[in-house]
Structures are given as structure tokens and as C-alpha cells.
Length: 496
Ligand SMILES: [Zn+2]
Image 1 (tube, helix red, strand yellow):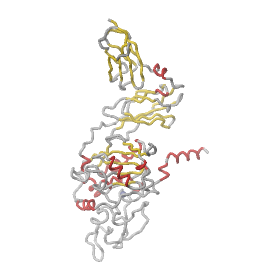
Image 2 (cartoon, rainbow, N blue to C red):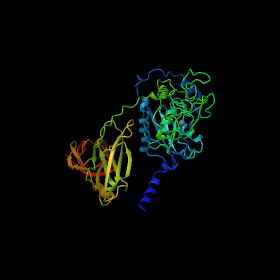
Image 3 (cartoon, protein in one colour):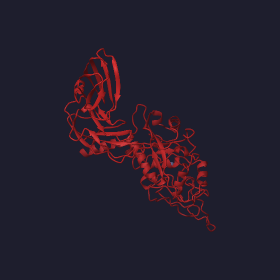
């Protein structure tokens, strides 16, 4: 019984897995335009590429489409994983993809449940961010596609902004290769079978031979002019999803047997068969970026931000191991890494993340009931930059929650900021104690008529720090302090 329930849960949690690739066409990208084939034929593949070690850093904008009411879609972690996987696969091409801006969520049923391409063209036209590779993750189930992309200068969008990559959620899982395949199209790579699969024994089909001086009646190689235009990818005739090794037999016009290579990302072999681009494919992709006049050269106009390198785990400050928190007023904080502007925090009950959220701050205040009363929990946190989207989390720290969530008045008393002395002269300093590190602190000084005499935002660099009172006449005042959701009032007597 238990196993059945677990199995049911697993299926519910993995709708994309159940849907699977077998129901989807691998790719909706059509035949390359003439400009792409002319470009491929124009390149000099004899030049040694070994001296070319420049890494091309390429900005990506991630768009996640959801239904109009915000349902469905993908979270940031899932989207980031696809980019990290892409970077692993594109490393051999010396291309690195970074994400300068947060994920752009678009809630629109027309895009989410598209039944043809036209709303997706509108989506691209209206949402593309110039000088970046725009990747849209959406539901392509009705179209029955894993993804599609546009060759340079062939898609919607505009100047330095044309085309996009559109991915189905279903084919954006960690072992999927569709994104890498579509990126290949975006940088001018055709399918290995293009122009040949339609009629493998026509004179215009790419032939198996690579010999340009065959003896009559055999026909010479035509790999540089037909098929995908590359001679270092074998002639391919299969334009439907296939398993490696290939069991299908097809002869070319010379009577030679086609032996398509399943390891190429631009074939239609199964995801697990694919692992590489050929040297000529890499040359063709890189040359679209080689200078500002190249078809994708605009992607390198804006330099990559100077991201800090995250090499160590974050130092978690509170709660520490064994600490107890109030469930709906739990404050989590960690040490800042200079230059880092995005952190992801997870709070677990057993191994299930009850909180999984991103913040630009170095603290997180949980006001929800996601933290259960009187239980053992744990938490961890990681720093992220646009160039390091898949950094590991730090160690999980165990903490306990109190029995009851406190009422608002109890909350103010709990963990309250302390202020002392409460009697002093104008111009003297008072201590503010039990501050939360690195969370901005708001101070307001009021007189007894409620008039605000001073409002000041302070950086907090220590748990206890001094605040200098202004030179004000003797009398009774109120100091209002706000930090990370905590608010308190303190009576201050100023004497002469
Ligand atoms: Zn394709």
C-alpha cells in the first residue's frame, strides 16, 4: 500500500516525465534559410582552430511562460539548471552563457496554451530583450514540440534582437539536449539530415563518400554543398527521433550505406546518445560571434558584468545549530559575499523544502506558517550570480521551532531590539542592541505630539551599534525602530 502511494506521488510530481519526449517532435525548426547555407559554405575550415581559445560570453534572458492566473511553469531553480547544463555542453565550443537579469515571468494563456506558432511570434516580438539570447520556456504540448529556434535574421524581433529559442517544459529536464540543439540552430547550425532526409537517393542528397575524386560511375563527395554543408558530420537521413545505435538501413545514390552519427547534437537521435558538436560546426557557431558585423555579433557588444567568483559556502549566521525560532517570525541571516546580489534560501521539514525562495538581502524573515510549530527543521542557503547559477548549497543547519506562533504583541517583545541608556543629553549617543546583521535599520524620532524630527536609514554592521541623538531640547521623545519586520517604540528622556 505504501509503495503504491509513493508511486502515485512520484507520477504527480513528474508530469513532464510522464508526458515524455516520445509524444513530442524533437524540434520545430524548419530548413535553414539560404543565407545560412551560403554562410556555412563560405567559411574556411582548413584554418587551424587551436589558436582560438577566446571564450565568448553570451548574455541570456530567461522568460518563463505561465497561464494567465500564474499557474504552471517552471521555478528559477529549474530554469537555471538548464543553463548550467547548456554551459557544460557548450564548453567545447568556447561559448559561455550567463544570465544578467532575474527570470522574466509572463502570465498569458495565449502563449502558454498556443495551438499554433503565431501567438509565440507575438510573444517574441513583444518580450525580447535586445543583445541577449532570449530563451522562452513554455508549454508546447498542443504543438507537440520539444522546442524550436530561429536562424540569424530569420525570426521575429528586430535589429540586434531577432529570433529566440522556445523550449517546452517537457524537454527542459536535466538530461535533455533540446536546448543545446536549439542553441545550435540559433547560431546557424542546420540539422545533420537537412535537405537529405526528404529524398536520400536524389542527386541533391548528401552522399556518404568524402572522396572528391571518385572513379566513374561513382559520384564524388558533395558534403560541402549538400546536407548540412559540413564534411565532418557524416551524411544523415533520419528526421524522426531515433535510438542509438541506428538500426535503419538506407543507401545513397552510390549504393553506400548511410551511417549517421548519433553523438551529434544536431541529429535527431535520443538525448542520451548526444554529446558533441563537430569541429566545423563549432567554427560555424563561433564565426556568428566573431565581430559586431557577424550575424550574432551584437551579443558581445555589452561586456559581461564583473561577477565575483563564489568559491566557498556562505557563512550562516542565524539560527545556528540547536537554536530555537518562533515559527511565524523566524529570522534567517548569513554573511554577505561582496558583489553578490542574489541568494536562495531553503528551509526543510525532514527532507522536504517548505520554503524555497530567492532574496537580494542577506536575511530572510519567515512570516508564513510554513515552519511548523514544535518541530525540528533545517535550513541552508547559497549565493548566485549571473555566471554561477548552480552553486552548491552550504551545510544544512538544524534548528527547532517553538510550540506556538506568537501573537503580534508577543512578537514585538520577542527578540526585541534593546535601547540604552534611555536618559541622556542631546548630542550624546545611545546603544541599539540585538540588531540583525546586514539588515537595513530604520530609525524615526518623534516628539510627544507625534511630529517626526528625524528619519534615518542605517547600515547595520554589528549586533550592537551607537546612534548619536540630535541636539534637541530637553523633554520626552519616542524613538521608533524598524528592522526586518520588527518594530518597536522606546521612550527617550533628553536632559540638559
Ligand atoms: Zn532542430
